[in-house]
Image 1 (cartoon, helix red, strand yellow):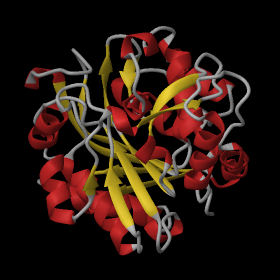
Image 2 (cartoon, rainbow, N blue to C red):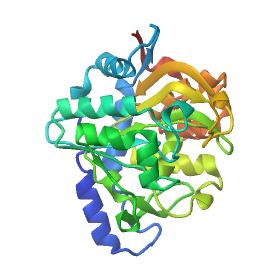
Image 3 (cartoon, rainbow, N blue to C red):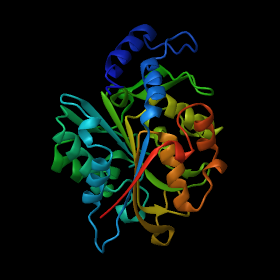
Image 4 (cartoon, one colour):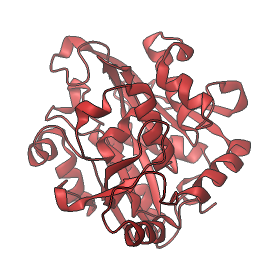
Amino acid sequence: MNNYITRRDSLKKLLKLSAGIAVSGILPSPFKSGQLAMGAQKQNAFLIEGIGQTPNFSIHALTRKVFDAAGGIQKFISTGDVVVIKPNISWARAPHLAATTHPEVIQAVIELCQEAGAKKVRIADNTINDAQRCFAVTGVGAVAKKTGADLIVPRESLMKEMNLHGHRLDVWPVFTPIVEADKLINLPIAKDHGLSVLTLGIKNWIGAVGGRRSALHQDIHQTIVDLAQFFKPTLTLIDATRIMIHNGPSGGNGSDVRVKNRLILSNDPVAADAKASTLFDLDPNTLGFIHLGNKWGLGTMDLTQLKQVKVTV
């Protein structure tokens, strides 16, 4: 189902209407078609858990296997699509420190999209540390070079004021390459966070906007749910091959990391986060952003409502 085919047209219309003026409450929501699609999508909601069991298993192979279990990448990506992948590469940390999405996961997803006939695959994240340094240290720069994917450097000229129509957030600067995509894949890492307890898929959208992050951290659970309701990814793939259990979100010490060898793929962002939270021995209902995401119809934390599949390599 082509849920996100109107993203670029919607952005053009919204920018034409707003002309850069931040006016809350008068601009139409650009993603109402996406909201309807999300309601229909619940009937076909799925959650795939991939587990690396063999010694020295291939993260690349596990990534491919979870997509195969979901019906194949062609079920979600069509010929000619512009696809944006939104990893968490905000920190200039090496992959083994679990502060950023593993480059092997990113590479596998890019290659799958290209095999499905995507016209262009772009990697976009508004990093906290210097972007070029993050690209180099996290390994994403090497992945972009190897695959030919576009690696977008975040800059002010790519931020446009848009009305998020959230319960807390209204007009906010949005990283435009992300909303210009035909299809959007959220590719976070699972880790500890000092304010929101965990950062998983829903919180990953803080890296899809500009503005003052300190303001976004106020009432953080509602804020990140507002962002997740605005962006509405085609899919969420949570990298839990190794997770950060202490001193998140930046970490920096190997003792903060636990190897889990897991990938979680879903078309329900709340369910994906709910499943990932259990890797930290947490009850999803105790996490504010999961509870609010469930409350506001972003998805469900009741995993029995989804088709669940487990695959191993």
